[in-house]
Image (cartoon, rainbow, N blue to C red; front, side, top):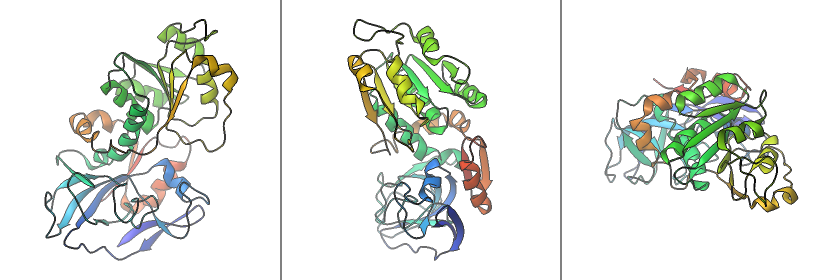
Length: 338
């Protein structure tokens, strides 16, 4: 069968590999859609995350149809539509350094257990929307790491897929007001359609002043100056200016979450933020969220569909990878299969 592999530094290619054969405890999946993640470009780099050595299969945002079910497996039947926990495979992380990747025609789930690697979804959910399950779980884990309370005021830096998924996650957790900050007008417009209460174009507006206008004055005896009443800041963009921006505007007791990958070290003035008692948390992956987000996608799939900007057929998967890593060319690219 055909599959897309990293074959060298910054080099992705089609390869022919054997179609996996399921055993009695396995489930064979026919991949129907696979999103392209920003980390796919990092995986092909020398010293990527995680470091790459040798040829590596790509694709870790899949949705699939069950093709075959082993005789000892219960809970699944051929024809079922499923979303997938790519971190629960017994042969390594699917598409992230493991033995298999979802930019291929078939994937086998070894030692399949209902509720562990797979969750059945209604057949009316479009495949490209179902493929958002994995990145939306990443976004929801980031939301959970910041421990939002009902009524919290939130700022999300970055209106890419994770930032937009966080908008939906914070709304589910009861946030009272959500602001999205970005520099691309089309992305900001999409954030409003998905559910943000306000937007800030940081290339044109004073972020600190606008946040005080939107979330109130958060200054105090301990945290003086221009401080917003924002309770939670989430970095879903990875721009080096964001930590310093948050440090300069955060009120006492605010939370700063980081889910974006920063490719270079950033400076944070601990002296100036000491009095804010700012809590900083990081989020990666989805320890418990992968199937918790599924029900919301099922219920609100039309809203999640707005996150997708481009769909390309499997035979154009290499083009999809290039499109996704080109700055400003696309927001969320999903590869679809026949």
